[in-house]
Length: 221
Length: 221
Image 1: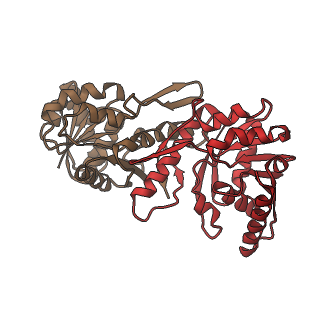
Image 2: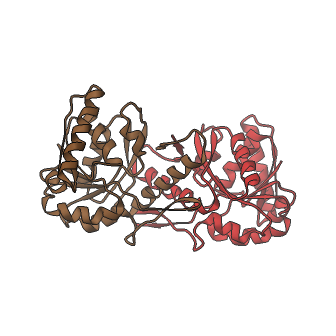
Image 3: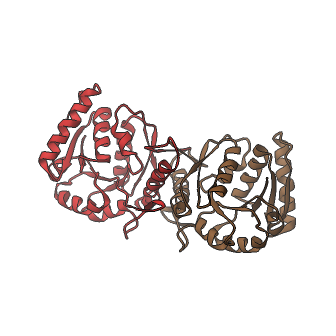
């Protein structure tokens, strides 16, 4: 498969690009609004992979070119840019499963708080912005970006997945399973996305309030 | 210490009463609106403890009598009854830390959803209902009641704790630590309670959607 990481030059996109490339064997393309930034970043990712003994190569191109031909496109951008990013690649999404990992949050003096958009969740916002025939799946909301990007770090985390299209959701379960240390779990349909997204500010609040805890993920049992 | 489980005859109250009595050595009193129900239930809990090799005895009385003299009172009632329950015992809360474990949820065809009250969270609703000089701490929101009540079940779960009163919060951290298999974690102040509470419908949605998973709790790392 070809996996596009739209906005894959930063934050959660880096860790997903590196680990999908290293662990799955799929072709990984990093997208950006800036083609040169995408290429430079992809080269750096390929070097990081080589430094960790992987011969996987990551490509980089503008978001629409990255999305073209992708079996899976991950919208790895902040919630604020999500709709614009999806609209910019909409014509390229053909047989593509669109994955939304973003979470809307706001900070006050107490900590981070879940701040969903009016449609209920960022994942549902992605579904609204996507063309009707493009299935949207929510996943990767609860991963600590810094640890995910560190290929020396062993991870052992669960990934709640939400989606209304059974085939598309199964495809993403399969992708999650291919990443070492991640276990996909079904959290139901897109209407359940807000309960998945709201876990992310809790993870950050726990890391902020407990000595020795940082870059937290979660296991359910 | 004396620990009162208000509404301790059902659901989460049963598991907390049994495990606090068995593991901590503190005096446990089960409260109910109905004194006879409280006494009958306390007797049954004491028998369950004896069946599991514990000599701990649980007392039962009406909620106000259970709260009188309690160092910690847990409002183990559904969110809908929380304010009334706290008002009924308010005059008895003297030097008592009030603990709120309740979560507001509603079910639709997709699953369970977080349904907080207007003040932001059920824990903050408890703080509003309690007398001004009674510190309120949020804890025990994310425990699977059926497994908690089964003393043969080994648990290994985290308990996010929220509170604005440092001494009261430390007291509840200490209580959580005394229960085998539970680890207290600070999630910050009461303003962060909604992010803790909203984890509960996710746990239930995950159990409903994944074969072989039930009675889920959570570990953060």
